[in-house]
Length: 183
Image 1 (cartoon, one colour):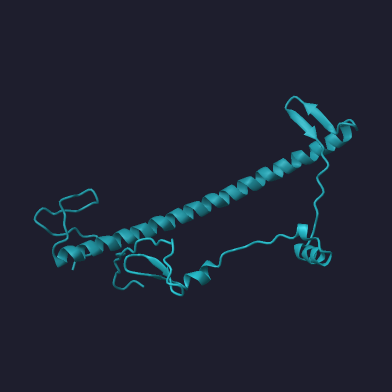
Image 2 (spheres, one colour):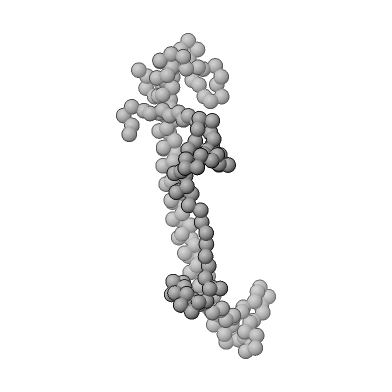
């Protein structure tokens, strides 16, 4: 048995890559070697993902730290500029024009705090139907239980026998390699 990093001992000592056309899996030794290569590829993939995750986490931590500093600086200057604008803006305009921009005070729009459930009860009680929204939704999960698919992929309703216009995706066969000792 070969270790997962060993080359296959053949006359031409081939170490195949996806671009290599000359290698083929013919013997049990070829298959054992290829499974070892797949295991090594999987382990390398895990290592790459782990390193990538650590690098991304470090970059995100740096980003959070830097953005917090910038937010603090931004808040500092906005606080002082707001005070300046409140003191120096004409009463009718509430803005100050500068070379680099405009400082402006605006009254915010009213935000209504409400409970949709309470409003729905009120609308039903007062018969304000124009404010009540009714939605229809097809129960696909329930309907799917009534369907059957024949070997040609034709979908029929089991209760009515009617052929539906529903189609299915072709059933495919998957392939996997399971390594001994792995969960």
